[in-house]
Length: 396
Image (cartoon, rainbow, N blue to C red; front, top):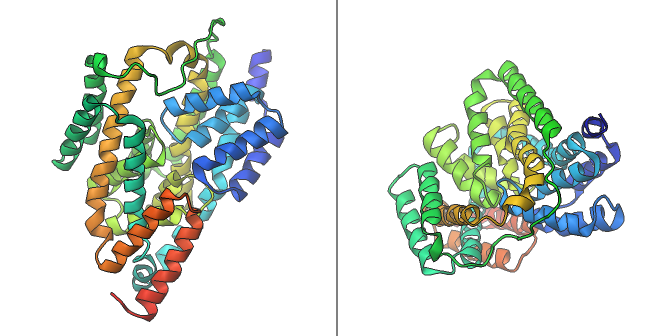
C-alpha cells in the first residue's frame, strides 16, 4: 500500500518547477546541465550518481532524452504520476506556443509565409547534415559500420520501407556482432541489488495510456491512425528529434500525405522558436490538420508512451545494459538512423536550397550549429535577413 500511495501521489512543487523550466529555459539537450543544477544541487531530488544513471538510461531508450530524464527523476524521488506529469509539464508550454504559431501560420497569406521562410528552409538541411555528422563521428568508427551505413542510405534512396531497414540493420548487427568494437557506447553499470519488479507502475501506466486512447477516440476519432504513427515513431526515435524528424517526413509527408513538404519544413523551423523539444512539431501538425484538441493529443501521444516506458524499464536497466546482443542490436539501429539522416539531407537539399542566397544561409546555419550558437538567435537573424533580401530587395 505504501508503494501504491507513493506512485499515485502528486508532488506539486516538482510539477510546477518543471512547468516553469519548460516556459523559460531554451536549449534542448543543453538543458540537461540546467536540470542537474536544479534537481541535484539545488533541490536535492536525487543524488548525482542517480541522475547520471538516468542520463545513461535515457540515452539507451528511444524518445527525447531530456523529457524522459525528467520523468525518471520525478519517478525516483516522488513516484510514477509525479514523474509522468512533471515530464509532460516540461513540454506543455511549448505545445501551447506551437499551437498559437500554427493558428497564425494558417491565417497568414501564403506569399508572406514564403517570403519570411525562404531564408529559413536551409536550416532544416543544416540540421540534418549537422545531426548526420554528429552521429557519424560518435558511432561510425569501423569499416563494418561504414558498409552497413552505405547499405542503409542506398535502401532509403531506392524506397525500401524505413522500418524494414531498421529491422535488417538491427538483425545484421546482432549476427555479426563479433565485428563490432568491444567498447560500450552506453554506460555499463551492473548492479548486484535485488531486482525490483515495477508491477504497480506497469498497471498505472497501462491505465494512463488506455485513458489516453479512449479519450482520443471519443474526441478526435478520425485522427487515431495519425496518433498511432506518432507513438510508433517515438519508439524508434533513438536520439530524439534528429531521428524522429526524418521519420515524420517519411510517414506524414510521403506516405500519409497529411501535410505538404513546404508546410512540414516551416513547422520544423517554427518548432525551433519554442523552448521545448523539436518533437513538439507533432502538435503543429495536429493543429494544422485538426484543432487545438488534436494538437494536445498529438503532444500526449508523442511523449507520454516513452515516459511511461522509461519509468517501467528503469529498474531493469542495470541488469540488461551489459548484454552484448542488446548493445549490438542498438548499434545497428544507430547505423540505420545515421543513414536516414544522410538520405534526408540529400532529399531536402534541392527543396530548401534553390538559389545562391539560400546556399549562403545554409552555410551560415551549419557554422552556427557547429559553433553552438543559440538557435533562436540564428532563426531571428535569418527572418530579418529573409525580410530584407527577399522582401525589400526582391533578390529571388
